[in-house]
Image (cartoon, rainbow, N blue to C red; front, side, top):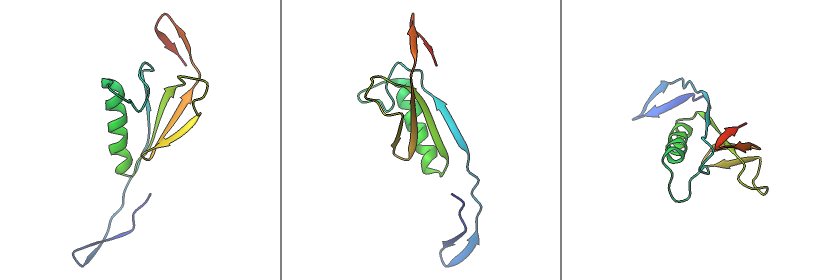
Length: 94
């Protein structure tokens, strides 16, 4: 993840890239990545894709929507961790 020497128009420059470990938490109502729509889910996923392309390590925490869901998925360079949850009166508990 650390860049060394970059070549720009024949001139070598040393560039350091500082990267972050970023965690985002989904609200748990719409699956990440959203298949059709979903405003907050789309924002979380698209911002995470952009940050991942900028060489940051991005993890999204989302809930499991079925028993067949994997615990960890990698989509477009983003790690998505799905956790078991309890739903009570539309409040999500991790």
